[in-house]
Length: 334
Ligand code: ATP
Ligand code: LTN
Picture 1 (cartoon, helix red, strand yellow):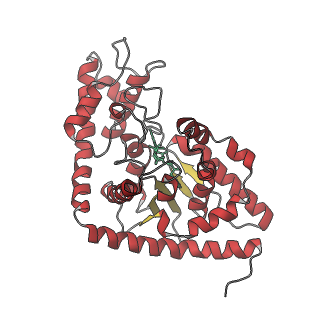
Picture 2 (cartoon, rainbow, N blue to C red):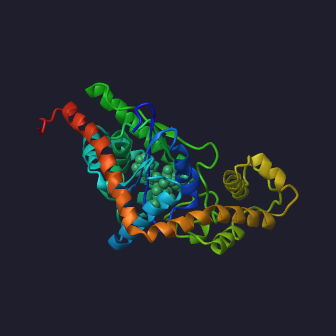
Picture 3 (tube, rainbow, N blue to C red):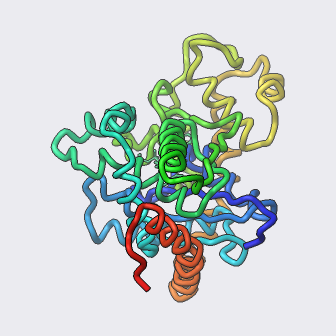
């Protein structure tokens, strides 16, 4: 860790077989670029994943695959700390301290809790409710300055800031108050089949969701089926959710502005545009899919990376937990 550099932290849940294009554009795809300028800590949020029902065999498989995919997306385990959340017990320890400094009322306002409990009415467990406290612990245990996430996590980030400020007020200045790092374009990629809804890993409708591990034919097929509008103009405008989403995807993937993309497709049909978006996305994701396959064939290397990652993560986080224990008044263990 370079003391001069700010610290970036972000995690992603292993809640499906692959990350989505939304995860990639809104979050993971940006992590690699930050590795030289910042100290980076990136991880797989397996503790968070069990807030919804998981088959243990699938979860273990998906977690290892997610770790490999995180590396394939450009995370260099030599430069960054790359780890599993469950391998660092400090997250769970700080979680408890923070839970006792978080109010029931503020957790009740979290929109993700409301959405997820509506989606899983048979499993509204306490972990789903306290999810944002664990997320605050993930961030504060490393004293992160910046947290790269999609817009859907903004409310959770606000909560983490509030909890940090409250703790600092009660116990004396301690935690750094983190800032969200949200991309200007692409912070919320929408479903291809219902562009008023966020593209989500756990969406039942597979056609609405592009997975980073989808092959080229699947990607093109899904884009061809993308819901648009009855107008025929490729222009970013209110009420044109489908086209807006495709223009956003195209512009982020090609590093062009939305205006440049509009000019490029001016006078062209939706069919041609959808195909072009599918092509650029498939070409961008193909090398990631290949690197993922290569890494998955080398389990020993993955294990070496995540055990080293856990050690590095613990050595940063343990200092925070020890100090927090002292702050709240526990007797020193040694
Ligand atoms: P789930 O469906 O299991 O809730 P998810 O697809 O919403 O999962 P997370 O693991 O919760 O994904 O999110 C990982 C990161 O990806 C977060 O930073 C989140 O803000 C971002 N993200 C998720 N979906 C999108 C999206 N559609 N557009 C942009 N960013 C997204
Ligand atoms: N809640 C996040 C995943 C997550 C996270 C974090 C993101 C868990 N802990 C800490 C940033 C920082 C989500 O994407 N749903």
